Length: 221
Image 1: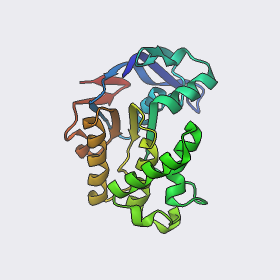
Image 2 (image 1 turned 120 degrees about the horizontal axis):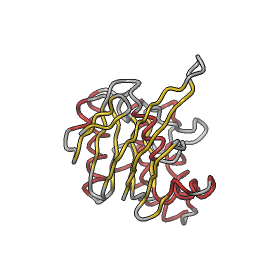
Image 3 (image 1 turned 180 degrees about the vertical axis):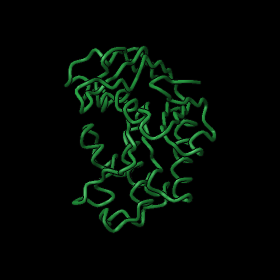
Image 4 (image 1 turned 90 degrees about the horizontal axis):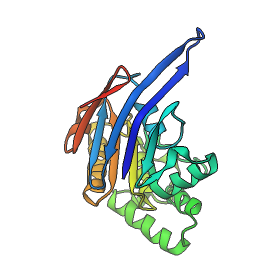
């Protein structure tokens, strides 16, 4: 489902020099696999996920979804590729404060042009599965952090993306809510999805198909 080869990424330092964050990273993830990438804060885990999800361009290397080399696409084509193949779960939830929980989930369907009635039915199912159906008409500010992340997870998987990328999805959650999210990620992989989660929490490695450590810009098995 996902194949990355030779990914290189650098940023310009305040001093004017370049800081190389990724140094020739290779990664392959099949459907049904959950891959965990661990590492210290500042090791480049979030950068790696952003590059894999086409939110940032690599300086070198290639990324393919299924048999399509998506890293070579135009900016607009990359946006369409993200909508077709990728779901994102972020540490900061990124829910729109002016929309209810249900409306936030349904945003994903709007961008994909799905049938409204079918999307609403699926959104309600997901909210029930994640235990927040009774909060569907509440705005984000009225939800706990754990509830917000559950809603964000529902939004990420509403369109059934083949690839799910999770960036520190439990970083702001307590252990109980963190366990719910990790269980949902594992369930996604068991259902055939390809899942990549980056986290500093050891629970991320539990039940993972493979665990890698990002150290010095290199991905180590």
